[in-house]
Length: 114
Image 1 (cartoon, rainbow, N blue to C red):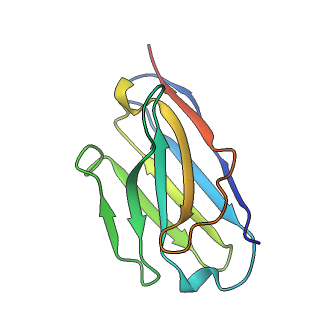
Image 2 (cartoon, rainbow, N blue to C red):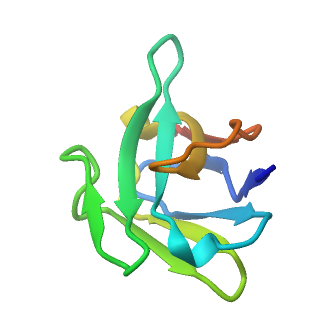
């Protein structure tokens, strides 16, 4: 059973940056595509960035140019570098396997506020 542990969230001012990490347990990490999702207060969870097993990335329009997803297959970890944060980026952020999703982790809270 794959377990996902997200970290790196916090409170940041508009225009600031954060780097989120997602550590995945289990084998064959490098064989799968992963994504970062977010769930703003009172809204549904949405996919904001994804990375294929070959490192090809794709982003939601709302974050393209500001967020960068990457992966380290040796550490079984997926990252999300978030720059130019806006109040509307406030959400709980989660990661998961794109094609074979595991149970959701606890997520990490990102709050963008002055």
